[in-house]
Amino acid sequence: MPKPVQVSLVGGDHGPWNVESLVAVAGPGLKDVARVDMVEGPWPFGLGGIWLLRGVTSNDRYVERRERDALTASQAPLGRPEATAAALIAITKSQEWWDLAQDERRAILEDRSHHIAVGLEYLPAIARRLAHGRDRQEEFDFLTWFEFAPSNAGAFDELLARLRATEEWSYVEREVEIRLAR
Amino acid sequence: MPKPVQVSLVGGDHGPWNVESLVAVAGPGLKDVARVDMVEGPWPFGLGGIWLLRGVTSNDRYVERRERDALTASQAPLGRPEATAAALIAITKSQEWWDLAQDERRAILEDRSHHIAVGLEYLPAIARRLAHGRDRQEEFDFLTWFEFAPSNAGAFDELLARLRATEEWSYVEREVEIRLAR
Image 1: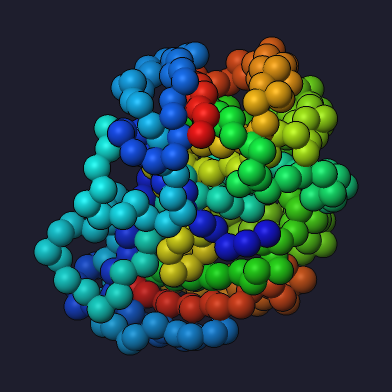
Image 2: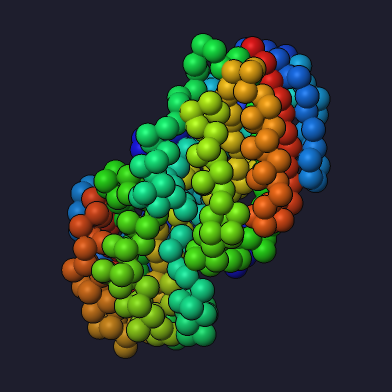
């Protein structure tokens, strides 16, 4: 697990990713843009855009050792040549979620919603990276970036639908889904 | 549990807290200063200092419901008139700590080191506030600010000694202790 890395995502008119759709699933959306760029580290000064979303990769909050081992054994990195489809799911959870104690959040996230186990079923086809925004007081609590081959778009849709049907998702008060291709 | 609040601590020549001692317990210390000021929110532009430490209050990472209820029932707020003694314990944990899975960190922190249970024994005499710096890529992973009546300084020393003797503390790679009075 590397040190925290800042992830900056800019919507505008540059970057390798063409926006195919941008949907406000819950709460306020984001302005429509043509392209999205993603960089590690602070956003380069002087490079413009319509919106800027930031987060930081961080330590696991819920994943236990046996789950980590299973994830590590199966997961794929970003940047695979065949993974020309991507999605950004930006989420903010409710104050009620954050008011829960650690064991209560774990019970909802995994024991009852199977978030980790469900995600594992889609590895290695769906690669992903989670960035946290809440402790940085950013616009979204979580930015999850997914990459997959276009032939796995249906599997990704299924993954999203399964997660959105969970008890955990009842604590999502804002969600924006952006689908992209390069 | 309120929304995250940024906490800024400045060492310099102003603020209500006189520095009585500043000790590098592990790793690099901080420059000696005469006074410390603490503000919520960003540090006011133009107000100088020798060093600036920042963090953010956040959700519980390890505390379970029964522990939260016990803490809530016993804890005291900052700013009590009689609490004219304070301490700042600034800590960074090792990469090895952050590489552990959630259940492994919980097992060390509470099951084997009793961090939460030990802290509870010193409530309400020792009031405290924890700010997180790691996800903000700040100088320290944790800034914990303690306030107590001078008559409880011995109890605070005991609390510190007990925590430092734990397995959890073997993962502390940098620690600075600042004792203060107003």
